Amino acid sequence: MKILGITGGVGSGKSEVLAFLQEAYGAVIAPLDDAARRLQQKGQPCFARIVEAFGRDILGADGELDRGKLAEAVFFDSKKLALLNTIVHPEVRRWTEQDISQKESEGVRLYVLESALFPDVDYGDLCEEMWYIFTEESVRYQRLEKSRGYTEKKIREIIQAQPSEAAFRRICTAVIDNSGVFEHTKKTVQSRIAHLLEL
Image (cartoon, rainbow, N blue to C red; front, side, top):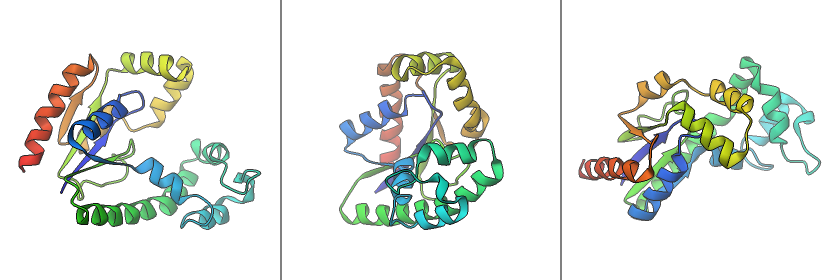
């Protein structure tokens, strides 16, 4: 089984690339943000420790974590964000390693890990390749305004809160430029996948 890591900022078009890999190559996609969310649900490994660290004020009426309140608590406080990460990241890593083992035993050929946080959380040792889905910032603004209705101010805040382009490039073995039409991107992806599957 080949393991590929995919990263990139908001609005870069990672979802489009992932959908193509799934459709064209039967790739199993593992979005680590989704895994982190599941692990923070009531009864899951991270829940009690997060409540203990941040208090019951971050719970919603249903007794689950209110993600909006938790985000507010850590967004402008690097120490609180670091604390949250020390709770969540090791559990996500543990889940990932178990899932990789399971999928390998099922005969999966291509397994794709996806996260915007790979520059901050090192998964390079698990991946044969790590791709940075690069898109020009002006294109990202256009996409996010159109697809999510975000304001320019909100987009700027989200982009500034994510790792820099230099940080993404530093950890990646390949850069996939997704600034133009997706047909061009597909050709680059096909070429890189052919190389990866031959490794």
